[in-house]
View 1: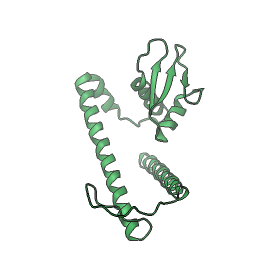
View 2 (view 1 turned 180 degrees about the vertical axis):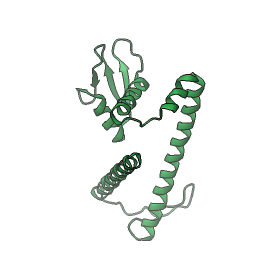
View 3 (view 1 turned 60 degrees about the horizontal axis):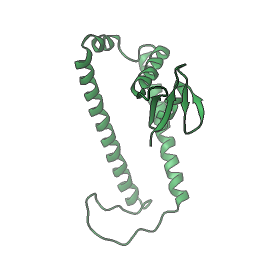
Length: 169
């Protein structure tokens, strides 16, 4: 479920789930934490999600100088919608590839962990083989593993950012 953010005429953003005003930086943090957001104009009901996401990207661009190459931005403006459609399709394809790779990596990790005896083996996808239900894993242990994976992903993201900053220097 998407977090609904209401945008008022004074440009203030209101998080309806948390019942509080939020900043673009807080929206960025929510997205990085995996939350889906939807931004709606209070008076017209117009969907402003893409405009708001673009604002977040532009704020990052202003603060981190040079994240998007100037030549790319010129081409994006010069060729208008055709170029934007191309970029949008390319980005969508890349994102789908990344997500597929992540699912494959998760599957390989689970298989490896099962072989190591950490998890019970999962049947191959599409398998109709019936077997006894695996013993229920304690919810606390599952939550701990999920939080560890989330922490590792955050560490990986931070390391990638540090590496990118060093490359730019």
